[in-house]
Length: 163
Image 1: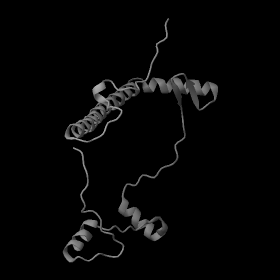
Image 2 (image 1 turned 45 degrees about the vertical axis):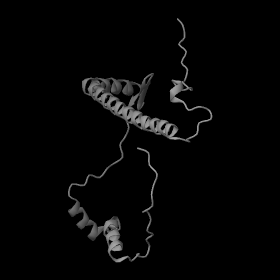
Image 3 (image 1 turned 90 degrees about the vertical axis):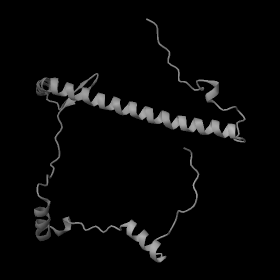
């Protein structure tokens, strides 16, 4: 049996994809080459993300299939093993199965009733939040020219982009 050697690709795939050692953007051809490489890299990232999203969904579906199909059998087997060994988990080469005590949790069925109860019994459990609607403040600044306290007006300058 022979060993398989895996090496990381550290050099560009083709000479065209790598800039020369002394690359500079000094004319429309070199600027175009650089913009093309940046746009291609973005497109590649999008394709890879789409592929990864599909693979994640496939793996999640596969996991759900195995849990629904064999999960009860695995749980029964684990319960038998754990009862005999008086442990909380069984370690296997591929992973671990066992039982874990979940902490108590609070399921709120009617938030209004809970708020009313807290007002009377436990007021420290209530939190009041205030949020600023920046769009209204921005509109006020635009209409009046007034800069409110606590605000710094920025933006409006040109920003370089690559598309």
